Image (cartoon, rainbow, N blue to C red; front, side, top):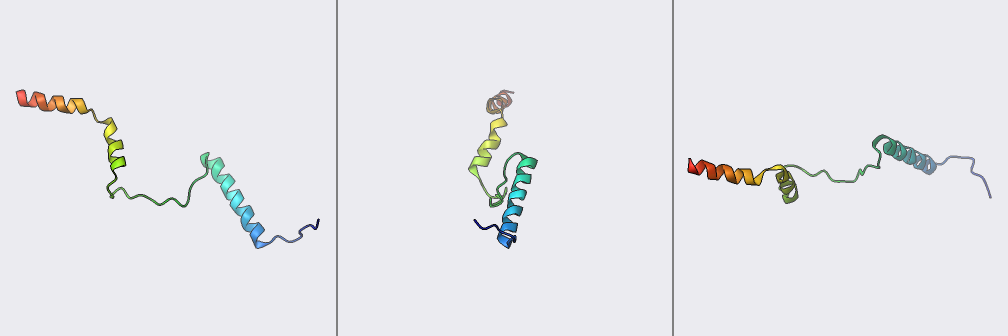
Amino acid sequence: MKRKDKITQEDYLRANRKASREEEISRYGHPLCHKRIYKSKKVYDRKRVKAGDRNLPFLCHDDFILNASRA
């Protein structure tokens, strides 16, 4: 088998990508996705709205309305 004496541009890019990925994993604990599209908060998203409602006390809100109408 013949041995390579020169480092090609492809080898250089491959080595840099691998080093970058390993550094990313060591820094964050997992590989990051750079192709993900950023989702704007201004766009209506039912899933995000419903996730934000989990911390609201629904029953307390109803009790407040009932108590306010009695007074």
